[in-house]
Image 1 (cartoon, rainbow, N blue to C red):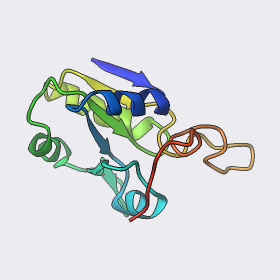
Image 2: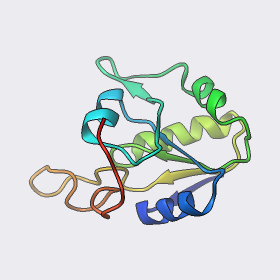
Image 3: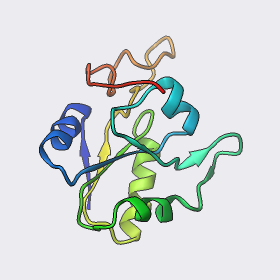
Length: 130
């Protein structure tokens, strides 16, 4: 089952469930330089420059999340790649998948800027850069 939570709900779940794992499915560059929540594990769903789906994505998650009943929260820039990644994990047998709606940066505003309408940073949740 894939559940959708907003960033605050996702943060609350992470604080209250020690089994929960946060997987950042953005590119390594996005994870490092744009920023990420503390403790987020970087496993890109797609990677530049060709933007093809990472064929090792599910295998990499399996190395980190051994319990298929553990909550896995998935984060991307705006909530689409994370949903696609959640669907792949659901097909692989994971039971509790959580897509973080609006992702890390949220939707584009009228000036084509992210971070002004929603997302992890907009909500004022903890984050860091590498």
